[in-house]
Structure formats: structure tokens, C-alpha cells
Image 1: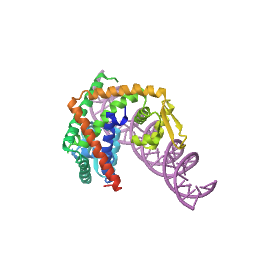
Image 2 (image 1 turned 180 degrees about the horizontal axis):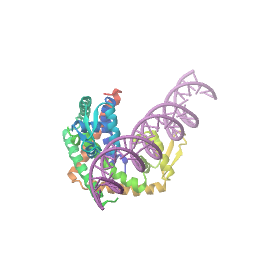
Image 3 (image 1 turned 60 degrees about the horizontal axis):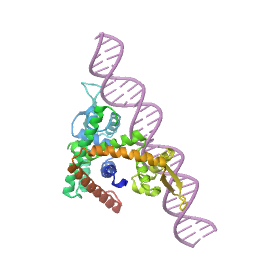
Image 4 (image 1 turned 135 degrees about the vertical axis):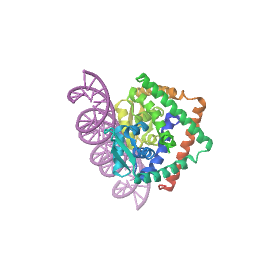
Length: 153
Length: 153
DNA sequence: CTCTCTTCGCTTCAATTGCAACGAAATTGG
DNA sequence: CCAATTTCGTTGCAATTGAAGCGAAGAGAG
């Protein structure tokens, strides 16, 4: 078996290559890490959100969220306030500066993504979208099954 | 824009989820990291290979290769000898124990991958394969273009 | 041959990351 | 109402990772 033709390997390096392209945009031009980028993305879209929701909607754990949010706050892109109803929680919202930064970064990231995806013939692009959706569904099915079993098979 | 429907994000988390499934196999049952797994894969398939070739055929840099190979050698899975023709180079080869470990790990990994992919309807699986190939090609085209330009646009 | 320049692999040091423990706040059971 | 337990966010510490530097080996010019 050749490594290069092994499906899991092809998937991994392709996803890495694509991701690298986008990181080079929001990383270099806007100084954001991948975690910061994702948080900013969610907070921008949700005008007041708790860290529980952030954790639920990303694959980040609470420590990663705490540290990334800290950095975003230091940069003035988001603000955090203590929830009056449950004082253990923090409510996140985006600042004007954060909104501005995000919209500019998003435009560039989307442009870069479109540049790459634009090179793919429409039929292949549809195939990619379709296949990816199917794979994600299959992965979720397996993860749930494992969770149900509660052990490692 | 919803993060969950943003194509780059879907690609990233799907690839991560799939990869996590496989890491849980070769990681837990065989104690291999992803780098070690990839190196072992290549060395098993090539009965004597230099680190230059290993670097060329993975996305690992020379330090990652050096450290992963060190660990593989400590575990007795590979052996490294100095190339007589160019004494700066190391020649890697797999040991009997390494071959045995790899073949068992590979069978399990492939089984897990097949378990997931088997849940996908054949038509979607073909779409995935086709779309992924197209995306990889597009990424390579962009990377080469950048390299040609020699700068960051 | 000798001197310089490059390449390869390893090591060292700083930065990043992940795990576990902690304090603050809320919930539960009596 | 109060003590015990749970949950949330942060911090401290250890392990992993990345970047720069170093010695050994080879290549090329004179």
C-alpha cells in the first residue's frame, strides 16, 4: 500500500493544505490564531453568547476558549462581562473594532477560499460538497455509537 | 454567515473527526503518534529509505522526522544506519518487529476506516473521492503559484 | 591538497499546549 | 438554612512543539 494513495492520508494532507492557505490570511494579515478566528466568527454572528455555547459549537475545550478569549479581549476585539443571572458564566460580545477586523478578515479569507475552489470544475465542487457531507454524517454516526457503547472497539 | 455551514470549517472539522478515529486505533492499541505512524508506513513500504525521501513524502520537517525516528528506533520498530556513500545521511529500514506491528496496526486502521466509509452510500463515496482529488489539485496549484511569485498574496 | 560554502541531523532553549487542581458561584439534600 | 456536591473559568505545572544554532560530512574552487 502506498501512503500517498491511502484515503485517510489524502484527506488529512488536503485538509491541512487548504487550512494552511486560510491561516496564512487571517494569521499574517490580522494576527489571529485558528482558535481566535473561530471564536471571533461565532461571537460576531451571535451578539451575546456564553462560553458554554462557544464550546458546544466548536471543538475547543474550555481552556482553549478561556485563553483565546483572553487574547481577543486584550486586543480589544471582544468584551466579556459576567452574566448577572449566573455569575459563573461570561457573556461574550464583539466590539466595534472586532466587528471591523472580522469583516475585513472574513472578506479576505473568503476570497482566498474562492480562489482555490474557483479552480475546481463545478461538477467536482459539487461532488466535494456532497462527499464531505456524507463523510461528516458517517463520522458522527460512529462517534455516537462509541459513546453509546461507552468503550473502545 | 454561519460558522457551521462555512465550507473551510466543515472540511477542517470533518477531517479532524475522521483522523481522530484512526489515531484512537494506532495510538491507543499500538502507542504510535501520527508522525510515527506515517514514518512507519513509509519505511515499511520502502525497505531502505533516506530521511530526505521521508521528508519529501510527508509534510514533516527534519526535526519532526528526527524525533519520531528516534522514538521508533527506541521501540525497536526501525533501525537506522549511516549511509556509507554519504555519511551525513541515515538509511532507515524496518525491523521484523516493526513489520509485525505495522501490519497489525494497518489492518486495524483500515478496518476502522472501512467501518466509517462503509456507512456512506457508494455514490457519495465516489463523490468524496473525486471532490477530494480535485481539491488537492487546486491547493497544489495555488501553492506552486505562490512559490513562483515568491511572496504572499 | 586546502579552504570555503553548503547540507544533514541533532541538540538546546523558548513558546505553546494539555492536564490537573483551585476558587467562586450555583445547586441539591437534609 | 446550612453543608456537601457540582459546574464554570482560570491558573500552575509538566510535556510537547517549533526555531535557531552547532558539529560532522561533502562539494567545489583554486
